[in-house]
Length: 291
Length: 163
Image (cartoon, rainbow over all chains, first blue to last red):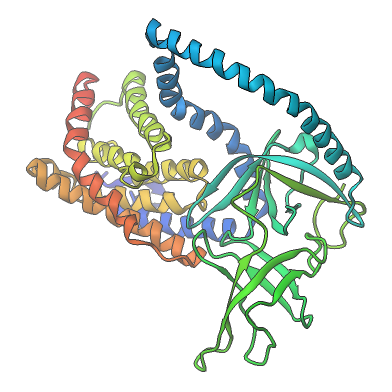
């Protein structure tokens, strides 16, 4: 037996694969996996949801030194500093007491608004407020983490809006949290219709610092800067008529088949701490596990 | 042929990778985060250079797959990058070991950069977003960090008697 032989198979001696062979095989495997993943294969998505259970504790563990440092610096402060702080806080207490009086009024107003929201209805949809826990933003991902999850009956593909327009859709649901893909995410696409003339289009995200893209419009399409695009309701995810974006730039290049159209999102993606989740009252016609 | 590693020695190797992953996940201010070295790739480079007979490309691929689930990147993206890195390091392992430290840092830096380029290429292919200049910052950080990381990991390897 030679050193390179692994054994025999049906009388053929089988060689140990070289590193180059292994690399080529694994490259094929990687490309296959990526194709499945990019194609939103359901079994791969299931694996993702499951691994979240492992990665969340790992992230918390990684953040531990930072929080430990914060606690330590809090604990090791001198008596003098504490006295000074105490005096300052007593002063502030008086001011705050005065402000608390106003708070009662605000509380009542808040309760009232909350009530309004419960009564507030989009025909065919039920609405709930969710809080934003975390926002991750990079050239390749534009995601929000919300404090509603599987326990709150959130589902993948659910529409998320704010007072100004469409924010995005839910892409992953965990036990008590869910992940929202914003309309600026490169993977996001929202079917829209122009309010001026009813032109149908799809708005795609292009990353954090780039405006939204509206591709596949031919030179004859009637679209101009300033046009407001609202959801068309096609595709069954977003309710119809919600503002998505305003066209900022339309340029045509005779060498290209399509117009280059850019738009800015109308929802205030970077401003809110609360967003609205929508549930359709009856099953949507296309896809989506409706309630 | 070498004897198989004991459970304790294996645990030491796994622990170095776990620390590298934690260092990668640890929150940093934005300015520093740009300069964050690719810890996992460097640790991988060290072990594949130090004990090439025990390390295989398949192992690196599986590690990459695990990283993909942690980073939330496209499944197979990091896997491919780590397999490429493992291949490059294994190819030059014996030469790398006799290089002077700074030359070693350059060679490892370039290998890791090549594997990072793979990731950048995949990202720009899939998402259609082009890499920006600051993406090259970690590649410089890798070469700078390498001599120090090398000394630390060599000490770990000697204490654990892994060869």
